[in-house]
Image 1 (cartoon, rainbow, N blue to C red):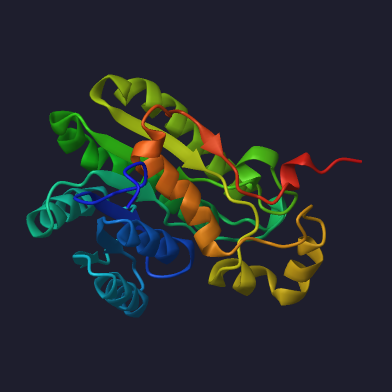
Image 2: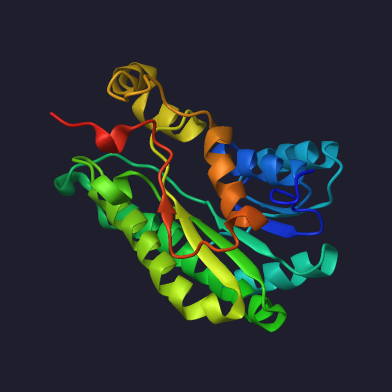
Length: 254
């Protein structure tokens, strides 16, 4: 394996890794040599993802606690490191989608949006930082969204939460750089996973695909390549950055 992409001996914790992009991240990092902490509240999906990682010859630990439960994340890290070893890579991937106008967003969905994307990203990171500092090594990859860059007319709560994730990246990159802990963000455009298919439906997705310069949305693994870049030696001089694999959506003009 090319040493610039080799993750042999690394332990990667990926939140929301039971399906969709998270599972694709887990499988790609495992294929490149990492052992994986699968973490998803959906137990059956987490079990299937764990089986896929094992089939690649890698070790795996599985957890189901909510990322918004700060004490549980501390316990998760302790147990995961007992099973696999010190966590080197954290991919803050867990997320939810929801479309609504400002008038339609109630307090419950607003709170849930920020609990998972913002609170979850913060407390998962907080849980791994002491160990990463002690070992003077860490790679944190936050998953934001193209909508955290551009906004969207019917998802302001989602856009705000994803923009906050990019704020974490910039601040943490400065805070942790002296410890050799690098922090970056991946901001996907449209990705063909269960979540957008359920929220938007195929008809809307096909219409939106026509607006993308390359003519389609991404397969989940196409986002995982960006995650793997930030996690691997190829990205050892990169921190505080955002990359948006989006098929050219952000360059569309009139």
